Each structure stands twice: as structure tokens, then as C-alpha cells.
Image 1 (tube, rainbow, N blue to C red):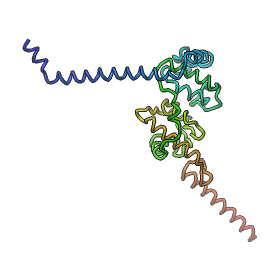
Image 2: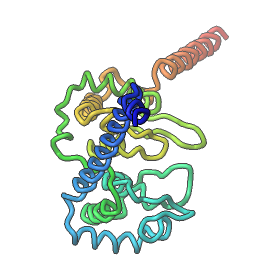
Image 3: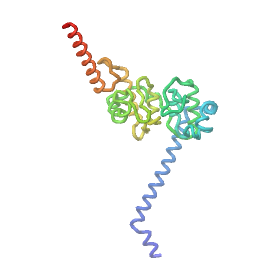
Image 4: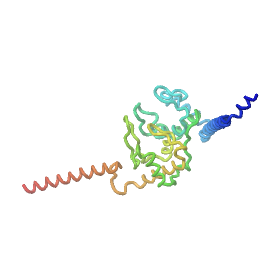
Length: 262
């Protein structure tokens, strides 16, 4: 009994109990957060939306993504991708794809807004995932200066500092962001389509995402006040244009001068 009492009073026992308590607390918090997320993602959908979405999915998407969206050799599982992923991919026409390739191209949407909403409702019922953003976060009234800084740090290396897009590896590319709705920009950030990383709310808060959208919409509205932006590729393209144009003028002048002399 004395030996057992000494073990209970061992200095490491308190540390072990503390660590165990932290692990249990963290696990319970993660479970509770997941449950809340799953509930939140389906609050904007009705049971009839999900039912109709299931029919649309079976007729148009199950060939690649499998029945129940569990995935197949032709398409990944959609369990847990959330309503935002469906709204982005289907709403921009990237899905369904016309053919397999390194990247899904934007094209006219195959489904109307109601059908897209129904497909999103169905996928939202399959597991917790990012929800379609609320209108308040898309009002384009954030801090454009802060949004520009966040964009240059997190996005410009792929999308270009002027959001004009850029080439990636193996035939993929980061698209230009002009003309893309704020909702789809937000959904892309939280779902990470193609090669794009996921910017969760832990990495970039909803308010910061609002700032980024405000910045993008501001530079889109301002256009290029200095004239032709030459693809917004920066000083390299501009310098090359000036060099070629300058040489052309010099050659043309030389030809004109020699013809006058002869």
C-alpha cells in the first residue's frame, strides 16, 4: 500500500493527468465543432432540395463520382466537400467536365441556379464541409488596402499581382479573376479547386476574405488607367514591347532614309 501511495504521488502523475485531460478536451471540442458544422451547412437547404439534388446527381454526376458520391476511378469522392465546392464547380460550368484533362475549364453552366442549389443541398447532406457564403461577407465593403496585401502574400504567386492569371506545371493554370463573382472567389478560397490550396477560416478569416474580394473588385472596376496593360505581365512584357517597337521605328526610319538618298 505504501508503494502504491508513492506511485500516485509521483511528480509525473500530475503531468500525465493534465495531458490526458487536454487530449480528451480537444477531442470533444473537435467532435462538437464537426457536428455544428454539419448542421450549419444544411440549414439553408430543404429536404426537397436534397431529394431533387440526389436525382440530378444520379442522372448527371454518378457516372464519374459513383452512386452516393463515394468516388470511382473516373472521379473523386464528394463526401465532405461541402455545398460550397458544388456551387463553385457547377456554377462556373467546370463540372460536369467535357473531357478528362489536367484541369477543368470554365464554360457556360449546364445547370440553372435552382438545380445548382439542389445539387449543393444533396452533397451537403453527405458530410460536413464548407457552406455557401452568406451575402453579408460578399458586400465588397471590406478594406481594399488590407485585401491587396493579403492577395499579394497568398495569391499573387499563381494568379499574378494584377489577378491576370498565370501558368502552372503540367498544363494547369491559375485563371484570371476579372469577371468572377465574389461568391465564387470566396468558395474557391475555402474549397481549393484544382491546384489551389485551401484557405480555411483558421488561415484566412472570413473578414480577410471579404477584404481580398473587395480588393479584386476594386482593381477590376478601375481597369487600366495608364492604357493597354499588355496582359498585366509586368515590366518584362512592357520592356519587350518598347524594345520591339523601338527597333521597328529605327529600321523603318533607316529604310526610308536610304530610299531618299538613292
